[in-house]
Image 1 (tube, rainbow, N blue to C red):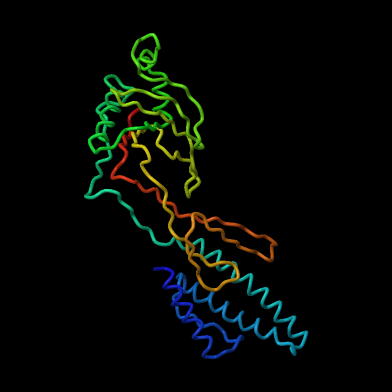
Image 2 (cartoon, one colour; image 1 turned 60 degrees about the vertical axis):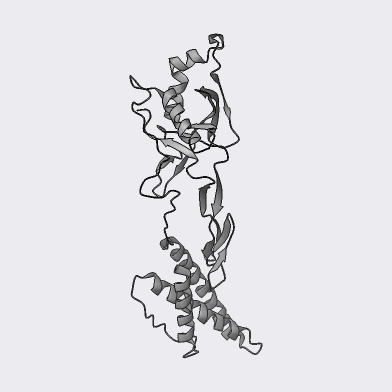
Length: 295
């Protein structure tokens, strides 16, 4: 793991410094140029030298001119280590792990429509009813229908749906009454009856920017999903980071972890919030997802 490897490198740098105990000893970095190990060794060498400079400057008998020179050297060292920590944060991605909530090569939470709903022969009511029955077969009640924006637009303008929602039809099909939900970027559209399954219908509009700055939707515009109630919860992984003014890594178990990065030359301080969320289901496949239902 990254943390264990970093601590081994730090111990090696500290041990090498104490072979000489000389703050002016040039660094002899044993690691290959361009590697993260070389950066970590260099960073810890700076830390170790600075600790001993701070010990020297605390001597009450130190010459003022010498103390001033050391103080300026410590300031430069602080800035160098801050820049290096920020760079290490940028270039290290940590460990990537895949979390699968199903066994085998394929999940059974997927549903494929025979015809797209906005094409001739498409039947969204029959497909949604079948998705509900897939949940029901697992002993899970179908509660919500989640729609992408394109799917929601189709259902709102579907003439057959509008006729069924006519209160004079004598059929209890539900109602469409759009309003903002308690979740940002989510619209509560109303309720619809699918062969006895009364579902609360939501449309997801919210977007985000990926690592390349491209705007994407949290929920695909052409997808639909039927879910069981209380189907999941959020879990949060621990965050390991090097805090300002520290020389070792610290690990925090929290939903969000703050970190300050200070640039003394530019008189700036940045605050970063770290978070490692994982949405975890409470039951095995408590949802049925259908992609590309309109087009």
